[in-house]
Amino acid sequence: MIPYINHFRPVYESSAMIAWFGAMLVVPLSGMPYGWVFALLAMCLFLVRSAQVWSALSFRMAISTKWLTTLEVPKLLDIQQKMRKESDSMYLGIGFEWTQKHCQIAHDILRMPTTDIPGLPRWLNKTPTGRKFEAWIEEIFAPPNSKLDRMPQGSSWIHGMEKNKGYVPFHYKAMGGHTAVAGTTGSGKTRTYEVISTQVIHSMDDVLIIIDPKNDEDWKQRVERECARTGRKFLYFNQSKPSLSIRLNPLENWSQPSEIPSRIAQLMEEGPFRSFAYLFIDRAVKGELYVEDKPNLRSILNYAQAGVATLLERALIKFFREEKFANWEEELAASMQRLQQKGAGRVDGMVDLYKTRFGNSGNRHEALEGLIATHSHDREHYMRIIASALPLLQMLATGETGLMLAPKNDDFSDEREIWDIDKVIKQKAVLYMGLDSLSNKIVQQAIASMMLADVAAVCGAVYNFYAERPSVVLIIDEIAEAINEQVIQVLNKGRGAGFKAFVAFQTRSDLTATLGEESKMLQVLGNLNNQIILRLEDTDTAQWFSDKVGETAIRNLVINSSTSTGTESHIGEFQGSISRSLQLEKAPLIPTRLIHGLPNLQYFMRISGAAVYQGRVPILSN
Image (cartoon, rainbow, N blue to C red; front, side):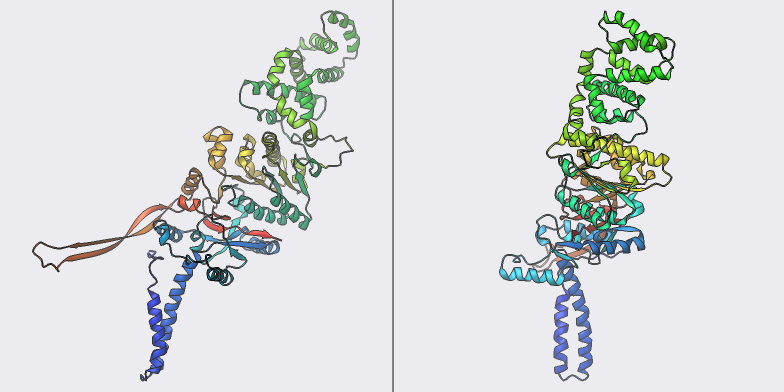
């Protein structure tokens, strides 16, 4: 049974320490026989009490100071190599495994008024003497590679309650269960991703794909710098910086033709117009594939705006040739005079010829039938239906954005490289997608959504067809900006294809607002087996994590005192009693108040339903 220890009682041992110190000095001078023996005994007891006093004071010093860890990349890589050999794990900062002992101390502190928590003197940092003393503390008591954290956010005692800290391991096998990284603005999500991505790049075995809606420049520079150190290919995509960006085709990889219109239609709002837009785009895509063209955003926009007459003509010519219909042009010329009197054109004549010779005989072609249905549809009604998709296609397929997302392979004047997700994986490159969603949120969300759909398609291909499955680390910052059905499929089935996903968000409600349903939000979170939780302001998300971690039993010291006197007793007579009892009570292993009170760069981590850690992410330096 774990004994109850009150870490915040007065340091009674200090009086005994002083007394034994005095005895150690006085006894040899007193002339007592064998005084040196008693002096030696006094010294031993003085050392014992001194150790107890030092332990109490060092604990109070630890819970009174916040530290920031700075770590050079070579040192980080040395630690990573050591941890990889010993436990097949990644380094995630300095910390300790969170147990019932720490929960007990936390609840003791939470029951105390803030002013009663023992700590450093209040005059520190208010006088020159105090500032010198604080500098002395930083110099003498600072952990290795650390400096004082003077930011006001968070409580210092959360990380300071454990003096025996070590490297926090994040096991590679657990990564396959995917990881949620949650934290409010400025709590340290991006710095956490810097530490993770640096180790992934230097591992050389993992493909790294980063989707960063905020386009954090420090993170991008870190990834680029580490790729240069390792000699790995660094790819940068940013729609707002076309001269620095690669070209990236989001429609390059698919298993079924229907995936292409699905990726475009999913960007539209739910409703009947979305279904009609999907239908017309699907017909154009199948027509392009029939004539052996490669569908892209620009071609789809062209057929949506101008109609499919040109595509239909090419498809009919190919069909006639395949059916050995050699004299179709003569028959068409013979019927054109009659058709022109009705206002029909050449394509209408070819359609009439197709229906007469093949349609009525049951020799129909699926792609042709779809194109014919679109071509013969009422033009005014067609434009009203497709109008919901046109603005989005215009934004993605025209101008510089169109050249980046629908690259022209025969444009030799454009020297920017052309890539796609499958090519990135096969060449074990590092792709950083900075989307700059602050300036153009709608377009950036659409690009992120389509790229993630491409990732899902490649994930399925890897699972179904690759003999040797690569290890792919997918990092998505602010997942609410890019979440779609394909991302859910990656989280649900990506482990079998070697995908390890890290997704960041600030609150659970962000996901609900984007997905539209709480059940889908729970589906996403249910596929994130690991959680790294930095400071949260949202109580709902903090409570979700606290419930995940579970409960434990803590000891509560209850003190009862009473006094009484009788009417017949002397005025000085009374009776009194004091009783102390330890009671067990259930409590959350990590209360939500601790999650709200984490300093910057500090976190709680739960790994696949197993160990729980409290740690501090380092700030990487060069």
